[in-house]
Amino acid sequence: MAAQQRQSLSGPAGNLEAVVEQGSDTPPFVAIVCHPHPLFGGTMDNKVVTSLSRLARDQGAVVVRFNFRGVGESQGAYSDGIGETEDLLAIHSWLTHTWPDLPLWLAGFSFGSFVAARGAEILKANGMPARELLLVAPPVHHYPFDDIEQTGCPVTVVQGDDDEVVPAEQVFRWAEATPLAPDLIRFPDCGHFFHGKLVELKQAAASHLPG
Image (cartoon, rainbow, N blue to C red; front, side, top):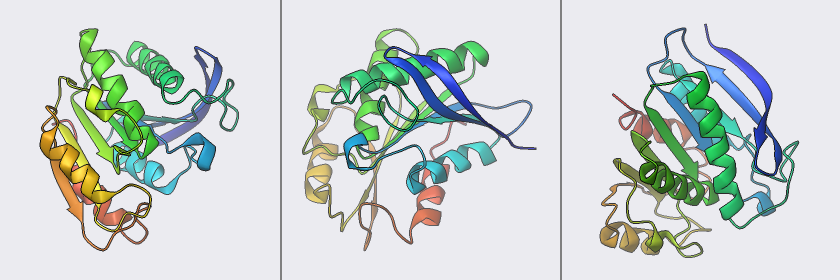
């Protein structure tokens, strides 16, 4: 039986509002899903974020989605992805302390994908690499994805061909050039928010969960 709890977890800039879902009594992995840009309405209740969270939960995982600093009930203020990465690492610390020794599936949508990628690089450097990293519509035109060179895990990029926010061709060029060597999944006739494509997005992501 899936269980869901809304919690207030300690973060570096104050408490962080989070939803924790547990899909089974013996979860096969843990998951964290990061939301879109805080200054443009991004929250943990975004449909892409909740869809990916349900995917992990339905596979039995313990999954956390949370509001970055300054969003909803989370304390602090927007920090250009740097402080938000610290928020992610605090969530990871709590999650792995509560459910130790389980592989991590780390996912992010739009701005959240930059935070997830930075977080994955830091976790790898600290000897705690994620098992899988999923980046949905990564805004490579706006954030320094080129600076992220090692995540210590397979990377999957999902990008809509008709994205009206993130230039799809720039994502394709970055995916081709980055040393992360991601598996690129293209969605034809698909905009930034995956309207009408959420089921297909979950299906694509399902093949890239920790085995």
